[in-house]
Image 1: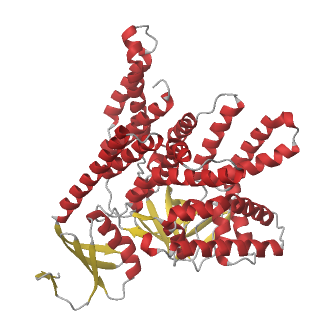
Image 2 (image 1 turned 135 degrees about the horizontal axis):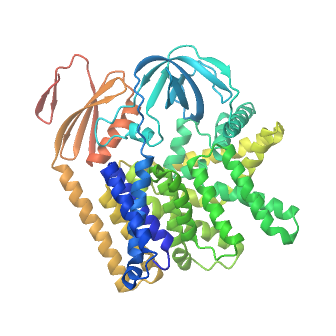
Image 3 (image 1 turned 60 degrees about the vertical axis):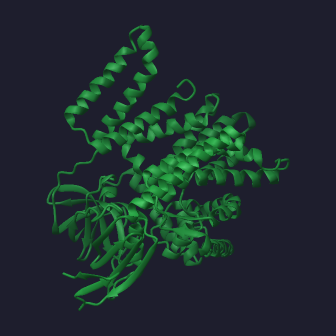
Length: 588
C-alpha cells in the first residue's frame, strides 16, 4: 500500500463497479454503502492508534463503496417506451460502421416530445448525413433483442452501456433542415466529416483512402471486410485503430516542431503547447474512447515531468484510469479499455526482464530492434488471456508481423498525419498522393500475406474466466523465471502451468458430457444444431448466408461448448425428420 497506493485503491474501486454490475443493489443498500463510506472518512479525523493501523484497509473499503455508488448512478434507465413505425426527428452525434444495406449513425431522436438516443439505419440510397442539419423521416423503431443463448454477443447490453436503447430503421424519404444550435464539439465533428469527404476525392486507391481515414481520423466505418480480416488475423488491429502509439507519435511530432521554434530555455512551454494540440486533435477526431484514454495517460505523465516529480508509470496509469472511470464507470466494460491498460501493465512487468535476456544493445539500431521486440512480446503476453476470452482466436504470425511492421509505424503515422493536414487545407500534391498510395498499398499487401498463414492461425479457442485468471497467474510468475531462473521460481511457474491444464481438461471433460439440440434464429434464418459429446452438426436453410452464419452463430457456439468436430448441412424446406448418429429428430 505504501509503494502503490493509487493502484491498490483503483483495484478496489473497480471491484466495487463489478460488484454493483453483478448484484445491482437498490437505493436502500446504496444509502447504507454511502453511510459506511462517510463513516470511513470521519474516522480519519480521529487520532487513534488502532484506526491509524486500520486506515489502509478502511480506505480500500471506502473506494470499494465509492465504486458501487458511482456505478449505481451511472446505470442507465430510460423511461421512454416506443415501438413500431413512427415519424421521427433526429440529429446525428456520431458515424458508425456501415454494412451492405445501411449507413449507421448514433443519434438523438425525438418522437412525440420524447427524446432518446438510438442507432439510426439510413439506406445507402440516401445522401450521407452531417452535423449541420436536423432530419425528419419515418422509421421502424425497436429495441435490440437480448441474445437467445449465453454464447452469443449481447448487443443490447453493449448499446445500453452507451446509453442507447433503440434502433431506428428508416423506411421513407429523409428531409433535412439547417441547424442553428450547433455546439463546439459538433463543429469539430462536422469539420472532421468534411476532411473525410476531401480524402474520398483524392486519386489514391480505395483501400489507401480508408486506411488514411482510420489511422489518423479514427474513421473505420467504410473499410472493407477483407482488410479488417487481414489486420485481425495478422494481429495488427492496434495499428489500424487510433491507440497510444498514434498519440505518442503525434505528440512527438508537435514537440519536435516546437522545440525547433522556441529557444532552449522554453522546453516546458513546448510540452504545454504540444499537450494542448494533442487535446485539440482528440476533440477533432471525436473524443473516441481509445483516443481520450491515450491523451489522459500522456497528459498525466507529462504533468509529472512539468512538476519535476519522479514519473511513475503505475501512478500515471492508475490516475488516468481514475479520471476516466469517475466520469463514466461503464468504460471498465469496454474491451479496448481493458486491453490498452493491460498492454501498458504488461510492458511495465515484462519488458525489462525480456530485454535483459536479449543480446546487449550497444548500438542505436540494436536498441530500436530489441526494444521493439521486447515491448511487442510484453504487450501481447499481457493481453493474450483477454484476447482469447473475447475473440477466441490467435495467430503465431502476429509476433513476426509486429516485429516487421511496428518499427515502420512511426514513419507511416507521421506521413499519414502530413497527408491529412494537407488534404484538410485543400493542398493537393499529386505526386505525394501517388507515393502515399503506393506505400500503403504495399503495406496492405504485406499484411495480407501475413494473414494468409492459415496453418499458424487458430480460432474457436475456448476459454472461460477461471482459465483467464489462471493464465494471468502464469504471466505474472513468468517475470520471476525470466529475471532469475532458479529451481524455486521455475517450480512455482510450472505449478501454475500444470494447474491451468488441469482446469482446462476438467472444463473440456464437463462439456463433453453434455448433449443438446438447439434452434438458433439469425436474421430471418433458422439454424438447427445437434451436439453430442464434442461433436456438433448444423443444418442451415437453403439460400441462407453461410459465411455470416459461421461467423455469428457456429463459431461462437463451438468456442463456448468446446466443440472439436463440426459438420454443416443444408436443410431442405420439405424435410420433416433429421437422422443424426442413429437418432431421429422430428422437425416441428
